[in-house]
Length: 217
Image 1 (cartoon, rainbow, N blue to C red):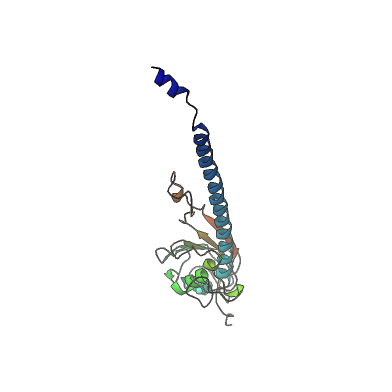
Image 2: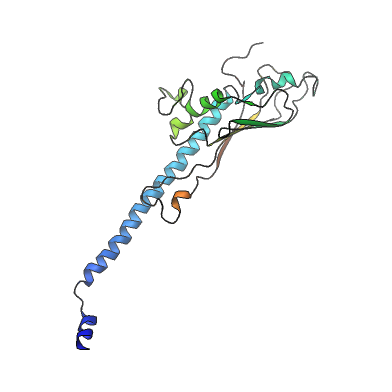
């Protein structure tokens, strides 16, 4: 009984235990803070990448083959020349390499891998981190983790333009990043942190001439 009492009252090593507990908590806090700051960087980089992608999409060949000829295709089939463009919504997903269309969609729908690669990898490039200037930079040059499985582009009639307009319609172009998880170094695998997705990011811009060169008249 006395031995048990002495053992219960023994304070040798208490400081070491306290330091061990506090150091563990401090390491979790410091390393967790680093991971969360890195997650914030990823969110900012992904946001900038979407903005760059939308800008490229506005002045490049459309991912939906035939979209740049839609303003001519709707003439007489839907409306007379010079009339307002009828409504259309074209959705292109890089993950399944497919485009779908609702509304006035004559000749629109086939998917262009080359046009999508221009948006993702940059002009005259098929890989990331090889841009020689900002003009040639693509989405993955801004945020290298973006792949062809993460991009959705939607072309929507904006109310601008007219049937028969040279250079094609002037749609609203929305570029989105989807299904891209955050990357954590210290918290990965802890409490499901490795499954947290970057919130879906979208940037919209009004299209110009949907072609990589000047339109022909």
